[in-house]
Amino acid sequence: MIIIAFVIAFAIVAYFAYRDKAVRGCRWRKDSNRDKGSLQFYHCVACGAEAFTGTKGPPRDCKANVGGRPL
Image 1 (spheres, rainbow, N blue to C red):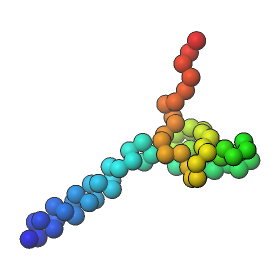
Image 2 (cartoon, rainbow, N blue to C red):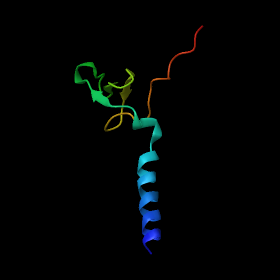
Image 3 (spheres, helix red, strand yellow):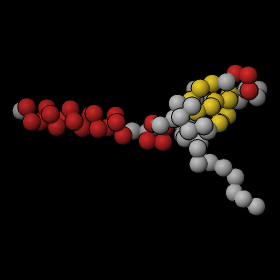
């Protein structure tokens, strides 16, 4: 019985540790001075990415590797 409880507890901890991998490393900070109308500006202090979002709260994905293609 104790082994089953340990396995269940391990599974729960593993689930919460590995969910939302794309956001885990980002720490978004809102900058109200750079908002554009209804779009809110966020800056990530972990990777340096910048993003606008129209939803409530910070972006859900890391934007560090998003960029334009070279011409």
